[in-house]
Image (cartoon, rainbow, N blue to C red):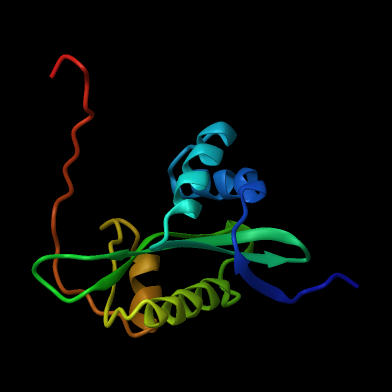
Length: 150
């Protein structure tokens, strides 16, 4: 009989391959080398945490959270990424990951957690609303790739 217990634990660099696969499912194609580099930086940052969910010893989800000190509001945390394997969705794994980082945020003295969700991710919107999160605004996100010749 397979072990069907979900275990939430801090991520390790050795989880990079599984985290990269899940990031790709989320729509962010990531190589193993890129994930190792990024994950190493995040895990070394004091005000960041990455937790993974394992099922039968296999990583089936992850969540990244950080403290975001801002000028305009009290210290808050922000969910930077959350994904559960497509084959494991609907089992409460995402809920367990979010509850874990809510505990982490309280320990960091954050009174609020923010999460941004792409306008097309309607299932995710329902997920967060079901956990008590409320939509406070709609915005556009811009980015600029920095080049040496700019």
